[in-house]
Image (cartoon, rainbow, N blue to C red; front, side):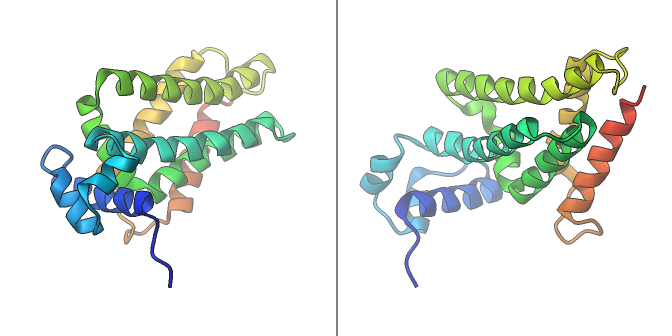
Length: 191
């Protein structure tokens, strides 16, 4: 069995410790000790604890953005593409629930530059997601009496709330929750 690469090990340990203790109550020393590396090794890959937090969220957002780009570019009707995009973001958020929960609890602790970067990346994702709603509104597939920005903010408010209530041992799987959220979004846009 091969050992996990140092950056992946550091991210896994940091994610677990931040979820258990909180970002601000976890020291770099605790992270490197749990990962079995030196501080020098950590600083070779990550300049700071802040960089770990940034990467924990960024890796999820990169995955979600790649998946959304594929869905948007697919040749399916807009209703099916929006449903797929909505389902995907819920499922990928649940599959990475510690990452997203940690991030939303600790984003304010990022350096201003990293906060700006994350906000810009999230904005690009939301603009692309919103483009599906706007396309459907232009084509008469979706109701146009609700601003697409409001629809996106409403939907993502519920997605960002998943960490408060979702439990992997609960009655619904990530896919079932994703399908319900996607149904609710698409059904709310019927003309």
